[in-house]
Amino acid sequence: MTKQQFYNLEQALKSPLEVTELILRYQKDLPLEEIAQLQNLEVLHLHNHSFKNFPESLLSLSRLHTLHLLHTRSAKVPEFLFEFKNLKVLNLSYNPITRIPASLQKLEKLKELYLHNCKLKAVPANIHKLTELEVLNLENNQIEAIPSNIGQLNNLKQLILTNNNIGRLPGDFALLNVTKLHLGSNPFYNNLGQKQKTIGALLKQFQNRDYDDDLRRLYFHIFMGEMDEAEKIANYSAIVQGLNSPNQVIRLNTLSYLLDKESNPFEQVGQTKIHVHLAGKINSFDTEDLDTRLEDSNIVIDDRLKKTTTHLVVGENPKKKLDKALAMGIPIVAQGRLKDYLHNIEEHYLAKNDPATLQMAKNLGDLLQSHEENNQELGLEMAMGGGIHPSFFYDLLLLYLWNRNLKIRNLTEKVLEKHLSSNLFIHLKTNAKNYYNDPSEDAISTYLENISAHAEIDPNELGIRFFRITDRGKRFCLRYPNSFLEVCQQEIKGSVLRLVGLKLDKLSESISKYAHLKILYLNDNSLSQLPNAFEQLHKLYVLSLRKNKFTEFPSQLLQLAELDNIDLSFNKIEQLPEEIAQLTKLKRLNLRNNRIARLPQSLKNLPKLKTLNLEGNPIKKDEQAKAEAQKLLPNCKISF
Image (cartoon, rainbow, N blue to C red):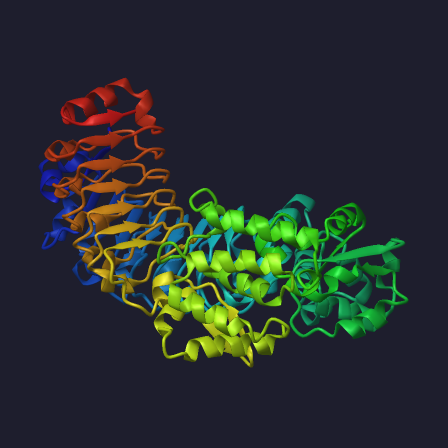
């Protein structure tokens, strides 16, 4: 039987036995119970239909193996939903669901489960019963803990836990055999050193080396610096061995644990001298005490690196890397990354007439001025357009205040002047004179407080320029927001907004308060979907979503009738919806470098469409599909 895809229920019911896939998005008041007539249906998409309206009679669809129920606005999942015993793919994302019933375990054939962008506070209790599960996506929820039984999912290949409230991972997490693992934007992850964020690589090493379960748990706890848990599994000698196989990262608390046991902990594994270099930043570790304890040990730590770490990387022969880094006058952790150079201001920027520092500052100025070229890599464009990205602003400020080299100070001053509003810049400069010779954290905090309190400075502007400056004791620091729009405190008065190159992976529903926008640039981010509130941007006529991670044409755009220019190039979109015909004012559509093989017939209902870019899509190799496209749009310039 040929597989047939339908976007209209009425049309599908005219040939009920031919329908294998039915996609119903944003269509109200449909007689959903009639879907039961489609006895050969395999895939069903229902968007914006409440769970309450989902008829139990659909259980008769014995061939159904894929079910997508998105944007239902329902918090409670009906129990009968888990009676579809042949389901292999279940997608309940974008629903305000707080818990999944225990009956989920009935779906014994389930291979893919998508529950992202819900309101779950816990992983489904019986998740380990889904022994065939290969994909689990729990991104953007409120999950606080991962159950240890997750380690029983032997077939799991993809696990997405980004943007939750997870405080730690259980030891049995080490038993997973995943090939794709996303853990970012969780409390435990944010506290890890850069090297420790390669948890996925660690799990792959476990697989390649065929470690037994206990060994996996042991090495995982050591890797995470959880020595109390490691001691429950193995004795001291086994732990020392674990520090050299397979992982190469030691947190300072782990090193302290070893030194409490003996002064030369690594002699047992036959190494004469261990070179230790750094991979993070120091919080409150007593480095003087560390110096004393290492005097008679077989561990070497370079003085230049000691003040900026919470984690140590141990290796048998890192000396070449260290020598190269030190010859350049920079820490190895900062090599090649301008932002990391700036984080070591205390050591490097107080020296007078330091040629390396001067060159670095010049490079910084050049980079900040090469607006578009470096935007994606360094995020130098401020969200409000034309300003300094907040991840650099604080570093620039420190460079400006702490450096006694007049040339460097003048250079950074020019950069600040170019990118900040005149009021903010004047008061930054005025206050800065009081702190040139006092590069302490207290001085910086006072400096920022004075600026914030000044009568002529709009605190909302500072709120945007600094994003979120948090007061931890007397120290201000920048924090990356989950979404720019969640922390933005100022109404955007203009009709144009640029949120470019900020690596945003989601937008907040609060975007609805910018309904007056006419032009919106969201290119060079990591967006895979848009919030429902995006539909309220009714005045929008130019939209760029270039270079993101969309796999579907964003359905919210179908409600924006004024759109005449859409750029969705460099995404992974496989098809256009039939409903695209609703965008009757569309003139330009850029779909370059996607995965589109055919165009929907409804495109013929877009008489104003003048240019369509399909370069780099599979349709390029299909002469018949290209001919059909030209026939659909005879007055449109199509690029293949």
